[in-house]
Length: 414
Image (cartoon, rainbow, N blue to C red; front, side):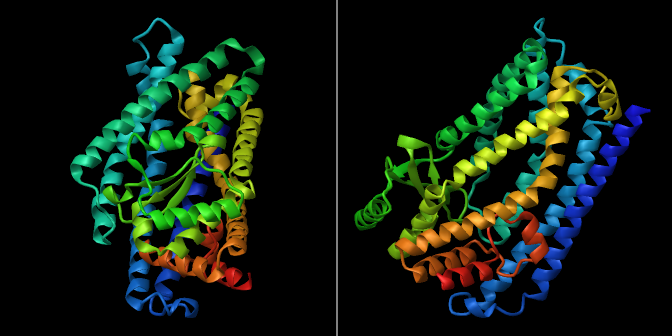
């Protein structure tokens, strides 16, 4: 009977989360289409009606595809759990090694690789149909294949090592396993932030910025903000896409500022400085650290409250999994438990990230002209075909950045 309760809860949550996300997408689509014919007044100077319409169509195309993906994702999760997919992979992959930890690591890694491969047609469609249709795609089929092969190799290595270590913790460290697993995952999160730029370098080239006057201006700005960095780099984003961006990589002494070459082409020096000042605001206000802290706390509470399911046979059976094993627990934790937790916590994190965007904008306005920040943002909205008129509820649920008009109003106040 307990197994049936777990099954009921699982199916209920699966339908609920899918339905809510489907509904939000439906709202976003309608809202964007209703506002398609007129550029909001704050943007009429820079954004042409044609660009506004393109952003609306692009948004709608992505939502339409995403709605199909939502249904598809729910079906795949169902097939892996109650449909017996996890059992199948256990039977296929779980017999090659004497060592149960190696067996478990192979099973977990196989699941991730399988899910990645199942998602391939979707990536191909997004890249070569949607992104190409709106003129953003630059990637060649050859490079796409190379990227995929590299991703799978990196995934196999990382997943293999991490799941082996996690399984060791689960099998060797007794009742406190969840606490040690939490410490292990927290350390991994920190290493992840530090190593992200290094992993990106497997796919992208970083070259020191060539434009001397731009470099001088940025260095002056960094001095004014009291910021130390180990260099300004340009990344060859244009190899794959025309979308532009800028970000910070690394920690402490290895902090680098990295610009997509596509961003440098589109903005003038003053606007680029405003974008950097905004990114520096995130750093100065410790947003990166705060979000990391939240992530680490979430993992703690998830393990604390849900760790008890590891020895609960009804839980496995309710989700259609035959073997009660550490490997299967980790799989269910990552594929089922964490996503459900994230669904309910997600809107809160989005709200917090939007608050951080306002703070970073405010910081940028202290050190650069607010008009430059405004121009840079509007250009980025335009060039990335981001809609200026998102549905408020959709935006509240998903968006890590405030709606354009609200953000511009706040900058005007500064």
